[in-house]
Image (cartoon, rainbow, N blue to C red; front, top):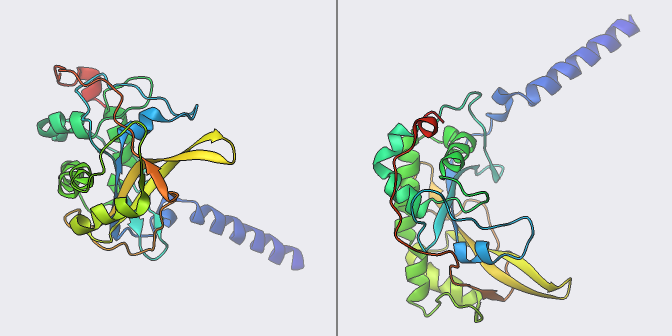
Length: 258
């Protein structure tokens, strides 16, 4: 009898482990707010980390401005991202055709090797978009509209914080420049580049992360407290990739099938 009870316990434990790792169990966390991550390409391309290399996309011309990196889905109860809510992610480029110009300009992927950006859009949609309450077209459209609403480069510039190859700015001044526009709804994130590890380094402004309502319409106060990882002073390097006129082409047949 004791052996039967032990076997039953093992079977029950195995069943619970399987359920806890299943997509249905992971979906128990429900996203109730979003985080718009805007990347500064000047810092990304100036990074000295070997794991980060900057390549110009094959399609379109990325702006010398903050670029959308992702619109992430979060659960305010846990404070953690909710991801991968669809077992079989269905990504189509056709719903995005009317916004391709803006996607190539403001949602460009600078990773190497050079690419059209579409694999990144697919990855973001499958990771976060399928967990949102938005369809694919609205998901990308609202990310672009939110970027325009935040206008970080304009607001930093209006306070005299402009990209510079050698100058540093105080984190306090950066925060003060953004608060009048978007309130206390954002976090400034830095990439630390070591000059002489571990004592000498520069912090580069790499991202601005903004909390957004679950429908992607409004900027909100962050439900979970978030602190910047930057030091007291921050570098804000100019964008280093070339900006030249490029003919934007429609996706090829293979890309349309992504």
